[in-house]
Amino acid sequence: MRISRIIATILLLPVLAALPAAAQQASDTLAPEQATGTATAGTVLAKDHMVAAANPLAAKAGAAVLARGGSAIDAMVAVQTVLGLVEPQSSGLGGGAFLVYYDAAAGRLTTLDGRETAPMEATPTLFLDETGQPLKFFDAVVGGRSVGTPGTVMLLQEAHKRYGKLPWKDLFAPAIGLADRGFEISPRLAALIAADAERLKTYDGARTYFFDAAGTPLAAGTVLKNPAYSETLKAIAEGGAAAFYSGPIAEAIVDTVRLAAKNPGVLSLADLANYRVRQRKAVCQTYRALEVCGMGPPSSGAVAIGQMLGMLENFDLKALGKDNAESWRLIGDAQRLAFSDRERYLADTDFVPAPIKGLLSKDYLEKRAALLDSDRALGAEAVTAGEPEWDHALLFGRDRSIELPSTSHVVIVDRDGNVVSLTTTIENGFGARLMTGGFLLNNELTDFSFETHDEGLPVANRVEPGKRPRSSMSPTIVLKDGKPLLAIGSPGGSQIIGYVAQALVAYVDWGMDVGQIVAMPHLVNRFGPYELEAGTAAETMAGPLKALGYEVKAGEMNSGLHAIEITADSLKGAADPRREGIAVGQ
Ligand code: GLY
Image (tube, rainbow, N blue to C red):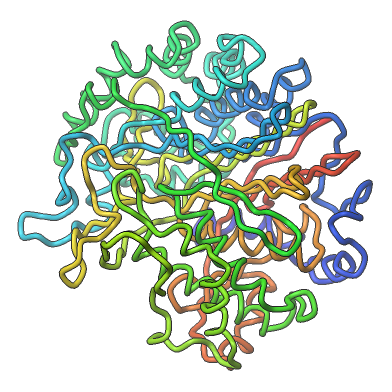
């Protein structure tokens, strides 16, 4: 058993063992709108403001900003800069992020796209070897080739310019202080360093930071200082994002990427200088009486979740209940159909046309839902992309890009009712394993398809210069009567879509509260085999699902769901017990 699995199991078992009874009680008594003032174990209550994030130091830094009158966006800057220090394997200055934001004063939802871009020197064959074959995944990941232009710093600045209240400079103080004083390496970080040691030692920067002089992985509890990160943060605090996208920090990033021995990349100073955050309309889908809103392309998250919910709306999941294999047949096959559309149609819509409206239309989803009118799992031949209404005349091949679990999710609500749902990433755990300026660089470009064509058709998500790789990140805000009711999201590669969709069904149809929906055992079906969370009650579905015709496989399902429910007189938050995070508020 791997160390990370041991940690996950220790964290999970008490919660999951208690789950069926607690969940049953919740579904009998707690419709979401009745939940005010009550909470199950794992749910934290507050009245004024709240943060839920994957590390206590980061969550508390954000809560302190809120307590002194800062906005949700101010708190987000503090949380992200601390996460980049204490959870460096998941997100940071060297990565990208998507923000779904509710602006309470304007009563408006918007999204900011801080996704990495492919360098202008990158070509569609970036991840093919000299014989035209796709590289092995980690041969592509480790080194400079996979590094896209980071977007997180620009996203923080753009969000703060629009919605910040406290001075930009002040928001870096918590992370600078921790980097100077040092922080204790958490058990999770220590386990991940040890598990990744071989790859993480490839390049000097990460080797000298995460290992001692003898090459031993730093242990949990070791106090780790990061003076280089402190200097980088001070430069950004003083000079804004310009100090990151040009000058010595940018030059060091480019050198690190282009001079990476064995596997150099093509990122340039011009890529950094030209990087822009995009403001985009949220993609929303009604589900029962609610509106579920999230990040559109280049993320596939909101479209895939919207498709699943649009199909599931045609069935009475409430009556079927969470302990019924029939519910999971519908959820699993709705997800498989959504993934079939995703692999053919979804990519960066600044580069390729995608039928977003058609994919989310109720008519189309009713037709797709009709395929689920069965008493058996869909056969593999029936799980193909559909034909949504489409006024563009391009057809794409299927995309088989590999997306492994990674990433971090942050939710924040401030006293004015502004809401942040931020999913942030450097892609794979420890990204490209390249470190400069005290932070790790992303390997986001491996979220592109390695192959350029499929059966003669170009793949929509192929590499192109300046393009953003397709993501599964699903920062979500659920609206009721136009007002935010729930903010939620998760890390987890392409499993993110299943994690968030399942949590939404559990919340809406099964009346579970936020503590329960983030802890609930996972059942995810992306490509046919039903993935069940090992060591949890999800495994009890193995027999019934096999009887319905599924192949099942149990495995580690390392979500990191964070959620806050907003009711008239309280905030209820929860952090996924599989990770080290907390919800904290007042
Ligand atoms: N790299 C994780 C995602 O964007 O889905």
